[in-house]
Image (cartoon, rainbow, N blue to C red; front, side):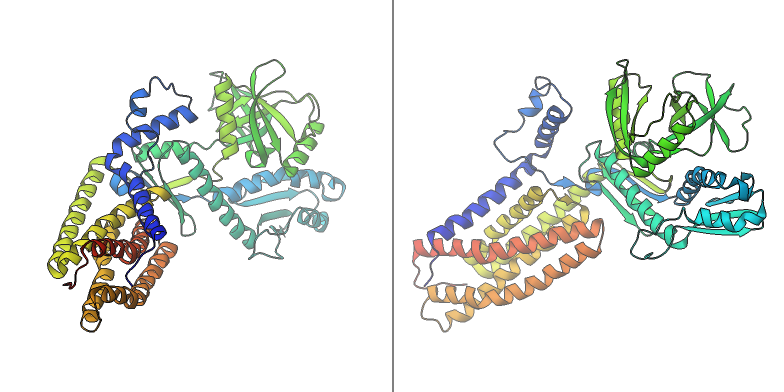
Length: 554
């Protein structure tokens, strides 16, 4: 008959208590947030516990402290839509390819004659050879530098297209390699932006690719769009250039294929370096703070296989020549090459202190942005607007909740009050789950909660109506209640499974606000079914065991 085992009752109430316990910190949001920030400051930044005692004492450590993260539209923050200039990567690839092409053709000087790089459109490399009769040999040698395209769509294709135009060799990336480069550039750009945003400790930033070349960046809690642009605009672009001389000013004339670069530490000191770098930061596999042989702060780095080979060949052939390490357009050190470096590792000196060498190592490990970003859209959402959105959402939830509570009470009497109690528990469980998984609550997410409040009583309505039908034929109220739950269960599952599938599709195919709505809707469905089939039934059973009514009215 109407009975729930003791272990089942303990499990149901345990889930309810646990869910409400995780939801409770959200009632004291500011206090818990300050306490969490203080704990983070102590663990990661080495903050003084004595200075943060007030914030630490704002919330007991033995209670759950997970919070629902507030999205951009609720917390305020910055919104950027950036376009990645992938053409810059093509140009950089051609610049880095030139030393290899030059060295390859130098070995064939007897057949191809002299070689000289010529001005070319962006993304192309033009090389003039002195003996056009050796063009076939030159083309074959340059084509040997090509590699297979590493992508699913470019299987069998080569990375380079090489052709002759008179006595000029024209080299460009193949279409398959351009497509693969675009994809790699976007993946790398999104990951580097994410790493840099994560460094400021913001909660739940939204960083995702949009279309072929765009990145959507939304960071709650940051001061302004300008601040966010400065944060992600630090390129940490590292290159190694041969030094050809010194200049008196940044406006001094430089020969073709050379550029003027200022010294970071010595104002008024400028270097003339070759425009094409010998190595780039992309060839670094690791960077760690260290000390040089004189005990000064430095950064130790390791190179990949390609970088190691290039670095070894260059240092062998240029012993005694100065070599500039350029970071973001400034020379940080320009040592002379004392001996060949073929171990695939080296040191970058010139750091003023340990903190600076540590910061440089972190930036180099995070990587440089492979291409520049053009910001197409920027928007700052003030915290006042977020507070207004929260207030509006709270009013909507309260109005919807009161309307549902009144309707259920008037329609089903005492049974309606049981459903109302389960509804309140249901909302608490939603916030408990959101806190537990660290989800982000957005304005559409609040709409999902409001919709869940209305949908939450659907299951109870099905059950109560079924109990009404069974009261007309069943032998007693206990049997009617039991049959009501048994026969309504399949209909409840069918209705909620279809809605849950919709929520999953919205989460998978959607982005941003749509996902926020899908998360709260999906969690609301789970909690609604649980409270209707288990919590409400347990409340009914406890009431029935105490009252033992001979007749019930639904």
